[in-house]
Length: 166
Length: 336
Image (cartoon, rainbow over all chains, first blue to last red; front, side, top):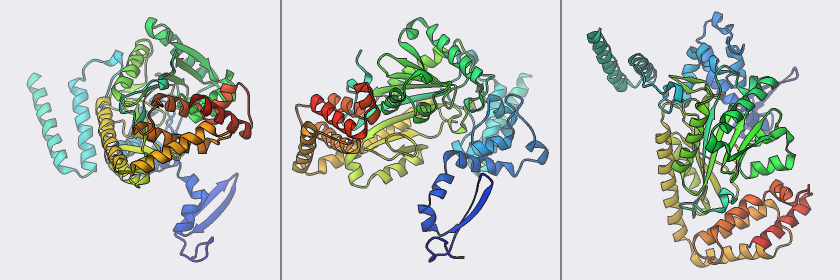
């Protein structure tokens, strides 16, 4: 198929828009697509986030897709559509689905910064262990096996240490 | 009281200003895009009361309900980088806590419940963070934040999760821009989780060779490490910009700077874009010591007060574009 705009190059970008129920299809070559306003509009931050989250959706079983956040009533599709999370509790409710996107965005998905006053207590052994296991999962997913092996050894050591205390 | 931009900071030849932003949300209340009008009012008042309850900090701030402000005042605040364009455009249910010297602005019910922003002249990320951190401590002593052990401070947009910190520098890079080096800089920055943006932030074009460099990653990195990365990038950009400046033809620089200064001193009408192009040349001339009898702080102050809304706010009435261009030329003549 040739580009509908210039009629010269092969159309490689296919855009479907649905505005107020009117569905339109456009087929453009890479050059015309780059110039096209439609494409620029489609890659706003929320869409990018939508894509980020969207990849997680495939792995979510059907029953989970209807789950709603008890805090604000959002379902996961709302978050994907808007690129915005509804409330703090959404992160707990949809953590499994969000994690892959968060790892893509930030690399690591474990907080390493400041803590609010009320919770300033040092991390417990359990939370540290949990954080390490999370890093391990991330390293395995990213196929960074050397790092994963080191993390695994640390986790083993901590677990052994825990047994000694019991 | 003098505004923060009337003073001169460190590395002022290349670094115009430093900005630190912390995003925070209160526990148990939906994020702004899902809030009711009543919840907005509650959040605004709770944060205001928490800040005013702090005896030292409270005195330095005034509380503004954004919907009571005229359009021009709100837009002028955007031009002074006090608030975001989105915050000015939809002001219903939003409030602002603003310090007297305008170096600290706290946006309420913007994308997050609380956005603490601190501006400093020149390169001063540690100082700006210290100020933001103290305000954050004062607020968290009286409010319960949405915080998660693993994900850190919870934010409406997951790109801010973790520290909720955005540390950015406004850099004046005319020589680097002219040599086509900005793309190289952008490539380097992106490798360490940072980004280069246009003058007014995301999706905006650079004006007068002004570029914003800021951190992108907020989860899995401490505040200190993010600021250190910013400093490292700043050091590189400053060094490259200075090296390129010194390799430029001094006579050419002098001529261009004085021509620009001459135009600004005598012109009767100057558009916003022309103004920024001219003042960028003047800034370069002053920073390189070619123009000697003009303080850099005067240039900075003029740059921040010459936007379309700021001009109208200063005149105290709405002006059409032609009138604005005349008022801008008059302002430049008086200050220079």
